[in-house]
Structures are given as C-alpha cells and as structure tokens.
Amino acid sequence: MRVLVIGGGGREHALIWKLKQSPQVNEIYCAPGNGGIEELATCVPICDTDVEALLNFALEQKIDLTVVGPEAPLMAGVVDIFEEKGLCIFGPRKKAANIEGSKRFAKQLMEKCNIPTASYRSFTDPGEAITHIRKQGAPIVIKADGLAAGKGVVVAKTLDEAVHAVQKMMEERTFGQAGAEIVVEQFLQGQEMSLMAFVDGETVRPMVPAQDHKPVYDGDRGPNTGGMGAFSPVPQIPDNQIQVAVKTILEPMAQMMVKEGLQYRGVLYAGLMMTDEGPHVIEFNARFGDPETQVVLPRLDGDLAEILLSVAKGCLSEVDIKWKEESSLCVILASEGYPGPYQKGIRIEGISEVSEELMIFHAGTKREDGQLITSGGRILGVTSVAPNLQKARNKVYDALENISIKGAHFRKDIGRRAIHPGR
Image (cartoon, rainbow, N blue to C red; front, top):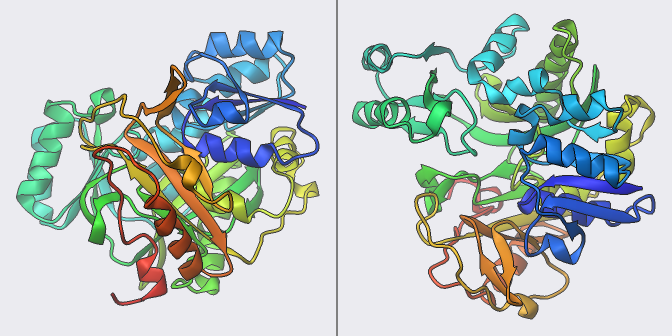
C-alpha cells in the first residue's frame, strides 16, 4: 500500500513509526511532516488543512489509504471530500468530527443518550457567562467551544481566575473564533484517564487506557498545554471501571452517532474523570490523542495498517486486535515559554546519544542546512517500553539527560502518581 498521513506532530510520527512495521505498507508520505518524520516517510510541503492540495496529491500519487492525524483537517472536511472522490481515508466526516469541533454539540449528544458528564451551560455573551459563574462559585471549568489545540480549557480555582478566563477567551479572543462561544462546566474531582477506541458505526474496539498530563508544571500546576507526557496502562484505575466506561460512554455514543445519521468511522477519544460516582466525560475528541498515541501504539501487538483500513472500509468487526502487557511512558520536551510565546530555530543536540531502545517522536522540529532545530512549542516526545512503569520511567528520564535544547523544559513527575499513589 501507498499511505498518506496528514499532520506533522508527535502523534503523526508515532503513527508512521507503527505503519512502517506493516508488511502491507511499502511507501509512506506525510503532509507536512517534520524533521523526524522525514527519516521514515517522504514529507510533502502541503498544509494539513489545504484540502484541495491534499486531494490532488492523493489522486496523483494513487494513495491507497490516507490517515488523518489532527482535528483541524477533519473539521475542514477532508474525509468528506476524499470519500466523494472514491478515496480510502481513515477518520470521521466533518459532521461527526463536530463532537470535538463544538463542546456544546458534544454535550447535547451526551444528554440524548444519558452519558455521564459535568453539568454545563453555554454562552455567547461574556456578561451572561460571568453572572452565571458568580452564582455557581469556584472551582469551575471554562472551555472555548471550538478547537484550541488542547489549550482552550481553564480549571479556575477562584472566581477571579474564572472571570479572567472568560475575558481572555471571549473579549481578547486568545483562541480566535474558537472562543466566540464558551461552555461553563461543573468542576469534577477524581483521576483523569484517556480512553480511545477504533469505531466503525456501532462496532467499538477500545484501545488500552492512558493518562495524560495537561498542565505545564510539576504537580499539575500552571496553564493547560497540548500534553506534557503520558503513560499506559493506568494501574491506579481498576479494570472494571475501564469496562464501565466502555459500556456507559463509548458504546452509547457510537450508537447515538448512528441514530443521528453520522455513521462515525475513525478514533473516538473520551477524556474521562473517574469520580466516586463512576466515569464522567470531560471531553470527546475525534482523533488519536497526543501524546497518548505515543504510549498506546507501542503497546499494539499487530498490524496498524490492517486496523485502519478495516475501519475506513467499514469492516472493523472482522479484525482481531491484541495488546502487549508491557508498560510505556512518554515525556514531552517543550520550548522555553510554552504554552505561551516561544522562540523557534533553537539547535537540538544529543539525540544520537539516546539508546535505540527508546523511541523519540518529533513534534516541533525541522531541518535547516542539515541541522535539526525547533519549530514548535512541543519539540520531542521521548518514549520507553518496559516490563513495568517504573522501568519505563527511569529509561525516559535517563535519556532526557542526553538531549540538549537551550531553554527547553519538561515535567519531572510524569507517571509518578501511578507508581507512588498518594504522593
């Protein structure tokens, strides 16, 4: 097969790394790719939302399977347009992807099929939102309704923080049009978990769970990022609770999509809070998570290309999916200043010193005159697979000592709560 992967981050690097292992795949292209992906695939300089250029490339190159990584191309309708031209593509159509594109839309679907989630109200007027927040009190959660690269959520511990978040999103438009409407939610307490599933209509095949670390600093302090690290499995959450989440959240949502005429095909990602009352949905995403993909795919025991193709062709029920017992952990190395403004073009050194046992998934990198330099906020994800989380964690943090990027930072506590509960 000739495969095209759309996107250029760590998630796409991990997808290509796994697809490269398939005996069915003999050529991989990536649009636009990055400095690490180009070692595994042919990178083509097409923006991931330039749907027309992507379509023309896929037709000219006779691409057999296209895999959509990020959310923005999904919301640009890339799947609809490829399918209309008879091309095989992995990912949900635009209307179905709206489960991520609009928080309000997702909440309305959850209400229809009684999926447990935080109570909420949506607002297009900042004054009304602030009045509601003052009545509810803090802590409270403020979310930009649209796409904001994983950063459009503020868990406000005080009323002042909540009001400031509304003003930033709705008046200053920190996240552009994504903040024109906001969702104000009840604050939920518990352990977070990311649970992704391959979905083809009503067929739901859950992946192994992972736990992401969104806040930028140790101890879950600071603003939300796109994710500073992840690990899998999540031993502090019992298996029976994971099964409850599949039965009460993922499967009902897939069924509701079919009822709504949306026929979801792709990855359905549920960001969950495991409360004392059971799992509740924090958010749904319409694609592989990042950096969860970097710890989940290394645990996949089988052919990723076969699975993605079966979803795209509507025959997922015929495929057997197995997972390895090993543990995996990933730590993200980010640019100085991230998730705020940051400088690009910083030299990346020391990667060749890292053991080949580890996987380095590039996110914000490119090559210039033969030198690898930074080009994004999240630069690299260093992943290890080992018999247990403690060993995987040790390997990753040892490897990070070899990598040198001026001003770069990373969290020192990824996976700690799973290995040392209560700390």
